Amino acid sequence: MLCLVGGVYHLTMADYFDYEGQPISHERWIELFRGDRVVGRTRLDKSHFRGGVPLEVSTVWLGMVFVSEDPPKIFETMVFLAQPDSWDDLGCWRWATWDEALAGHREICRGIEDGTLELHDPDLY
Image 1 (cartoon, helix red, strand yellow):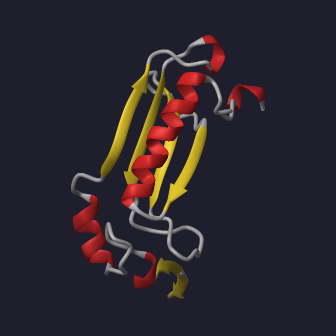
Image 2: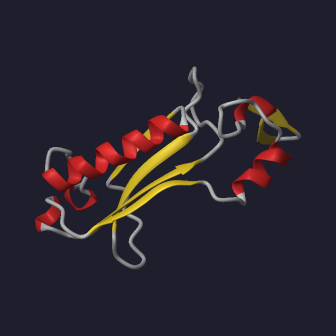
């Protein structure tokens, strides 16, 4: 939730969550964010995207929400081109729990490998 204080918007405590989805303070979120928050990171050298361009699938704990949902989706999986300085977002998914995020990461990797997952191609837009 955003709160306007002195002309500046701040996230309130209810918008920060630990790995289990429990509300935490901003200070505690910073401590956790500095730790190992990677659920999965997979490089796929063979994909069906653009004729086989290598892709990177990254799933991490964010610990904050951007949209109010119940339960809060505090994990995120993103797919990128596995190339230096390439930050094109080819897909983004959000999860509520570590287990959902891990299962989602694996399913996304399988979908990319077998060509059943359609990715967003920024070069087409």
